[in-house]
Image 1: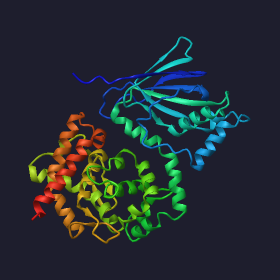
Image 2 (image 1 turned 135 degrees about the vertical axis):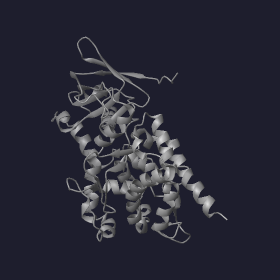
Image 3 (image 1 turned 120 degrees about the vertical axis):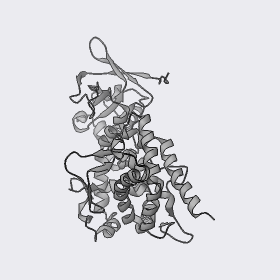
Image 4 (image 1 turned 60 degrees about the vertical axis):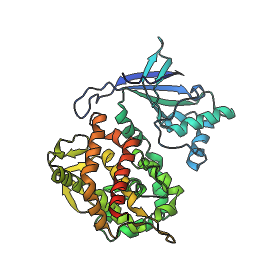
Length: 397
């Protein structure tokens, strides 16, 4: 019998409340869902303490200028439109129960539930209440989502937590912080397909590029740590870059190689698995996605394929290949332990079938869903050990 997770009940007082079902309410595979939206308008001073922030990918730093502006808006008793100017707080919960008058709402939070978006707003409200500066008639909007499958939580949280990071990326771009990346990509066929600022068009935005670089940053993620954050939150990778610019710049010689590997691992992994095992990668739902019409574009290598590896399955494989990265004594940049990117690709070819097979076995544990694969610590560890053991068996004296 499975473990029964604990729940925590929290009471909210709402001036207004409404509930409605989500129009989706079925998975892409046709399985039924029971997602509901619960919208509350509550007085800020009545928001309870102790709401978990488990789903939120970022630590809260309310000292930044943008959050000081939010605090000033909250504290302004002459302007009670805070709830109109702030998008509020989004919570993922197990269930919601209403009193007869629908003003007292009891929210049940499971162990992985809590604030998915708006954690900074929550902390600002708590700080203002403690300081006694929060006006009694200032309101905040809350949206509580129930019935959300765990594997959807990452995508929901990641999508919600983009606004500030996108704005910060624009400011960093304006300050020239990405010029070294632009210079490296300037002579490639895809250099113009990367978006560096808000509302710019591109196949990838800079946060995704930083996420791929995070997978290979051996100083930030020495074993037994794993760069799971690269999959869980591209936005958090921007925060890592802000705090560790020099460490990312050490990837300068490897950046183009890393982008090549992003494409190569996906295309070649399927080929190697089928040829080396006689298996059928086409049956690996949860690892490979297939387009019935058209193809996926792999812009870093200029390739096309009707197949791709889901990010949840891909990122642990790429992250494992950071074992092949080194910092030689006296060097201020990273390099490959092997002699070239071609040798790295050949090395991957030798273990691709094992990596794909292990990934598929992990997907079966989660009902062939890709998202939980990318969050599984043991899977990240198994991928890394597969790369390490093969390298040591091949190159150790």
